[in-house]
Amino acid sequence: MNDNAKDKITPAEVYFNRRALIRSGILLGTAAGTGLLYRLLKGVPMPTIETRELAQVVAAQEAPAASGFFVDEPKTSFEAITNYNNFYEFTTNKMDVARLAAKFKTDGWQLAVEGLVNKPQVFSLDDLGQFGPPEERVYRMRCVEAWSMVIPWAGFPLAKLLDAVEPLPAAKYVAFETLLAPDRMPGQKTDVLEWPYIEGLRLDEARHPLTILATGLYGRELPPQDGAPIRLVVPWKYGFKGIKSIVKISLVADQPVTSWNRYGPDEYGFYANVNPAVDHPRWSQATEQRIGESGRRDTLPFNGYADQVAQLYDGMDLSTNF
Amino acid sequence: MSKAKFYKTLVWVNGAIPGLMLAWDAYYGRLGANAVNDALRTTGLLALIFFMLSLLVTPLRRVTKWNELVAVRRPLGLWGFYYVCIHLAIYVGLDRALNLTSTVEEILSRRYLQVGFFAVLLLTPLAITSSDSMVRRLGGKRWKLLHRLGSRRSSVKGPDTATTPVRRVFD
Image (cartoon, rainbow over all chains, first blue to last red; front, side, top):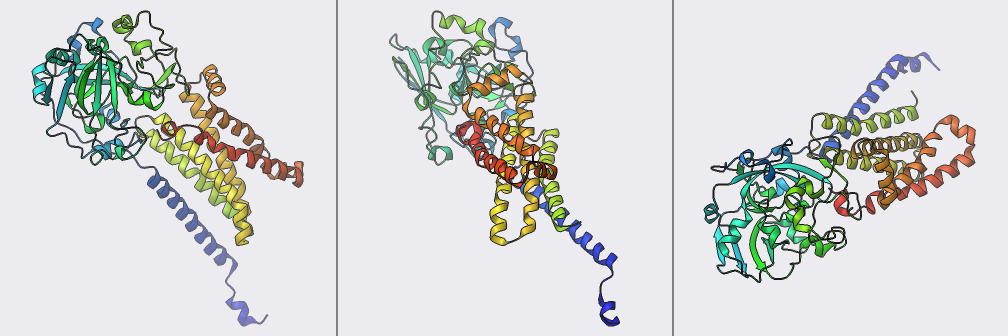
């Protein structure tokens, strides 16, 4: 090789340094790219928009301990309650309901109460004010999927509404129905469930002091993702019994069809009482993940409300009537 | 550093990133209301993704004739295995709260857990025999047989998510 060509050869250290530089660049670049891709695919939950404060909420602590109106366990954060929702009317993704329901309006809402009653009526949200200022109830909520929360609801006993319409002696059950509006509730365009969502209770369950129609949460109006403007709360049953965004309540003679029971009769029963001794076919119901805690809790019979409700089921086989 | 070593380093570093970000999000409480469930799903998905990527290497190399690519197959597979281990550790440690009886009971009674656990059992010998010295000890033919068998059967692991009904996975 002649001297001219030799001079043109890049000195070894420079060549290797350059390669090290390029390689470090590639390493950092791909690392940044992977990080970005991860963040894109797995976003971070959004903070919640606050709803209006409810006037005059009667505090739950005032009630006698035996009532079960106040459970002395740490309340689940408002953030969690409003960003982790099973509300298939919007989406099956629990963390996306808040975003999709954000624009759901409840103006002019009407709740029709009919069927085997003396005084069928249609209530507006203002009309419901006749049942008194919202009472705070701090209840456990246990989802059939084995997670749970402690939620400070605000509402009024369903029994007061039933008294106002005067059920006839033939009425043995109460049936509930959610709004059917696929243009406002996009999940209703899918066939993950049959719409509208329907639920039901035995009349004595409906009249129980623990059963409420909730209009609020943490002293504020229910956010859309939690079932605005009015929903059922039956704390000793699995959460799917807590039908949301109710438009119709009917008093009927026969046990009503319910959405999850219709979908999977060997997995979801009519009664759906929280029962650690009766497993779901696909997972154990013996323990639960309390949202906000890292360990697991033992699930309590009737979700800890046995003292208040066990007598409703005297003599019933709870493994067949699940 | 040779090209192969550099590619391996790329995979090692990039494979760690999702895990680090998951841990970071967990520390700052950004995994949503049910962090345990979220971490389980994410590590499960990451494991699947890395296994898929490692399986893609051989056909990709054949098509592109990019021979150095084979160097990334092992780190990709190992990252898949590591995410499987983290997934299992989260399940036993948090979802089952270190209750071994409950863990065994659940695995014995739930089809989707059996499939997942079977996949872990199959993958462990693959991870153990992944090193160069192991390849030498077993000899090329036996090593190839073991790993081919393992990759066929572990593609069954995908069903850990498929046999689990929609609601449970996308929860």
